[in-house]
Length: 221
Ligand code: ADP
Ligand code: MG
Image (cartoon, rainbow, N blue to C red):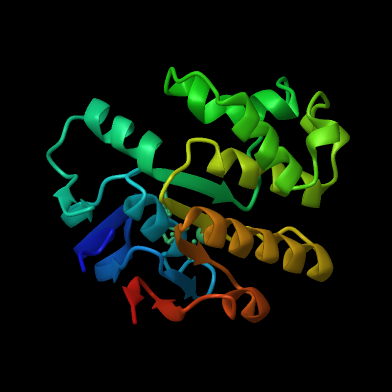
């Protein structure tokens, strides 16, 4: 079976002042369709940089990124965007909802950006699934943190992506709410047969995965 995401010998440095930070020191990684992998590691070890590069949001200095066997480096930015919009949904620790848009519009945002007409029945189903259909006309600041993260999950699913990349999705939530979010992520994985890469600090969340990997000072093992 072909990996749905494959990274080969990824290196990424940042220049901070006069100092070079080696955020990723030659990371290789592969995930099969339908697999759920968790990445754990201390703060600053390179997890978010890894996830952004795996999700084509950022480019590595060297190394190759493959999505469905297609090498992403070298494609035009426009092509990369198109592929990302179709194939990958993101969930972030800070939710990153747009405050001036309703819950409904926030969930539809990936489709608006891709100039795709939302499948209204499907969006409604997503909002029902995360228990927020009755809030669809409200604005993000009217919702609790856990509710906002549920909106972010529905938004990540809106374009029916095969891959979900989640960066500490339970990081800002209390234990109980975090567990509910994890159950929701797992349920949608089953329902939509998704592949998941999730960064977390939290062992309880990590244990939902098929496989746990550790990032240590820019190296993945
Ligand atoms: P983690 O998500 O594991 O906390 P990050 O991937 O965010 O780690 O960061 C890895 C290292 O790279 C850290 O030392 C961080 O300060 C640095 N870094 C990440 N992004 C940038 C950036 N845009 N500019 C400068 N340094 C960065
Ligand atoms: Mg991070």
